[in-house]
Length: 423
Figure 1 (cartoon, helix red, strand yellow):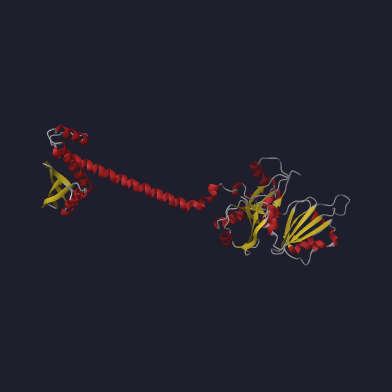
Figure 2 (figure 1 turned 135 degrees about the horizontal axis):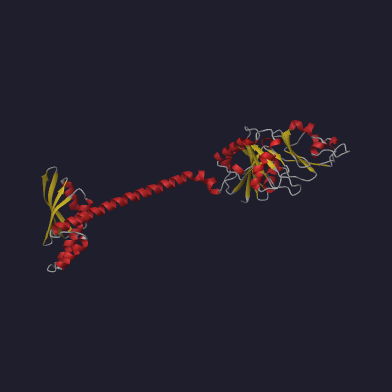
């Protein structure tokens, strides 16, 4: 994935989402754009984007405790119990995620969030067709710089984000910034023994606009250095660039781990799969019905041929293979010209096919002499007799005519003659 889509979720649900599109190095390609989820889905037309969601710092607790060495799965299991004394809420209602252990001091970055909050967010995103690869706290967008504090002033959401010089993360309303911004608070460390205050920190400030009252400019802070930046496009491009290129704690772990490609896309493909399965079942049913119908037709043809054979050779007591026995009889009729015997067999084949396709007509008697086949048929009506006649003549090799048709009960007994020569 060469591009990233970073979506920032506002603390106030009534405010629109904000998103940017970045290249692989974190460079801004598109945005920031403010919209709702439905508009976001419609606006994103590029494919192959890696989606990262930033959650408000007030919804995710970020701490870096020192934990014993353990594998990833074991570490996730011990987190709730290791941090239980530091949390006010029931650990069963919280979701814990861990990042990579710090090589500097061995601490493990941990993110904690309410399970229901994360579950509801993911449900909203999935309903909009968005399947994030990572969900992180927006405070992960503040890199850790030794000896330097980072202050992000977000006037749009009336909050500030601060990474203290010693590493811890803090977020609060802007109204509290003036009272909290002391040298000790910025440094994030207690004064050493015998000192009245900690060493002066370096402070880098990013604000989403001009800030009239800037408490960080107070001479009482005794800063080692102050570097100010006004972000005309807001804070999201800088936060997004950091989370896609630097370390962050992805909340999609444990029970919220991102599913495999097939499982993730299955809901989207379920209707198409159901339709394909329905088409396959329908095709199998059609083939089964056709096979059953052809089997019935074949059995009917075999019965017609066998009945015609019995009528023609009444002295044949047992019929095992009617076609082989018919060929044997034909060879035995050595006194008949070959053409005459061939004509008899051809007319018998045509008759068998015609009767097989008109199953309501039954053959009662057959007589063949001098190239003419005489038939006695029993049918439900004259139209059925005529249907047999038409099927015999349709081949073009024989002519057929109905010589008589008489009512016998509720059926019709007819006599038909088949002779060679098409119409």
